[in-house]
Image (cartoon, rainbow, N blue to C red; front, side):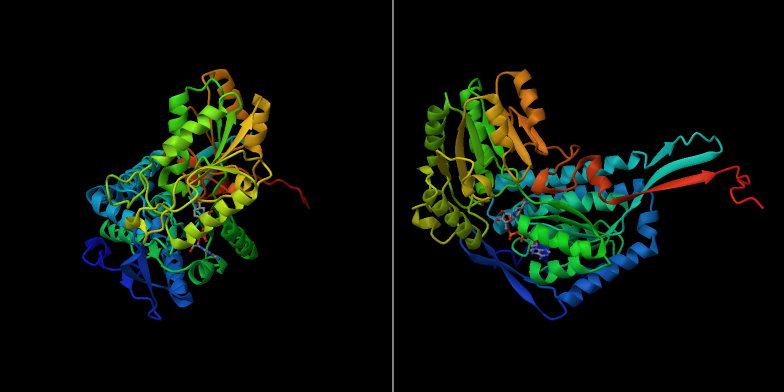
Length: 499
Ligand code: TXE
């Protein structure tokens, strides 16, 4: 197996209460490289009892109070140490991520740099005041609202950005003073195992970060049905998010959910043609479209649509699909055969719904790619809002094209989705751009750019894209409770119930 010798993956078990342990019932799972379907590692698979031990470890570490009582600036030092260790192991982790997910090495390097940036960003928030004074109108009363850690957190991540998504949860949870049980996707656990190895090396106290591995039905559900967890932070599919919210309701457990999107990319007639084509292509086909904020719905002005779509189709056919580990590949395979089957079903659906296939729509012909989960960048023209391929998240390299005549129609189309994660606008008119940006009901709007984010700005969705925010100060607040302390420094008899 390719990753047998990787030092960061020396242990592929569970990490509970500061120790690497084997899954109690001896369960294991093979992890495969989607580029050729070979087994690259075998990891442990937890069961209910393992999850119970991990949650108990996090609960007793929280109850002991040492981590939450550690000054935030000291907790920030741990974040910096983790970031330094990630930096030292950047290439090894990028390779692990590429072999596990299929994404290109270049993308994995960008991901790891973003992971490092998120740990460093949250370290800077330690200096921010966690106390807000409130004027009660009574000078004798010292009233303030303080932020405290919410407690034990269940952190559940998906397979498209395994380490990135997990870091968006672990970094603020650590800074807030929480303890946690992390569960990476069973499809792509390896980079999270590596991160936990570095967290251990950084000296984060036992019980603060725990790792369980395994599938959603057993491990995920055990983590999200227990009353011992105070917050569930989940990134994944809408169906699973619904299940988790339902489970959480049983114990009134707080949830933070990021459930994907069906994101419009609106191109006005005055947009600079070449940069708009370039941005639409990257926006939808990066990581073979397995991006929650992928710009999967092109909404283009009717006066430029024919030329625009023709150029997109020409360029899409030239995208070099291949193994992520090969530097000449521009995009890799889908994460699994199962995900490709889902994409293929959507392409068949698009054809049956009457959309016009203008690019892709099949697996690559190259026999060298026959064993991987590859699919060609695909474009459907002549789509309309009632089609399921326009409304549902396909999570693959599929772009749909709709046309519009007026700004109002473009906005109406852009908002005509149950989701609301992200949207893009391309126009040479900044006034119109700002107007449309305000009218779109999406958590992130890019004006003449697409796909960028910064750890300092909140990320999350309107509508069915989820609940809550990650990143930024708002992403830290998810891991905090806010307590109002009313301190009367000169109490007197009020005499409400006077003798
Ligand atoms: O995700 P799941 P799947 C979308 C995308 C994709 C679809 C399905 O459209 O095609 O979701 O993907 C854990 N209780 N996104 O099925 O199931 C699971 O083990 C608790 C969008 O692979 O949502 C994994 O760790 N946890 C998305 C995590 O949930 C459960 C990224 C995500 O898996 C569970 C990925 C349960 N009952 C897919 N069932 C985004 N927002 O970016 C599963 N899990």
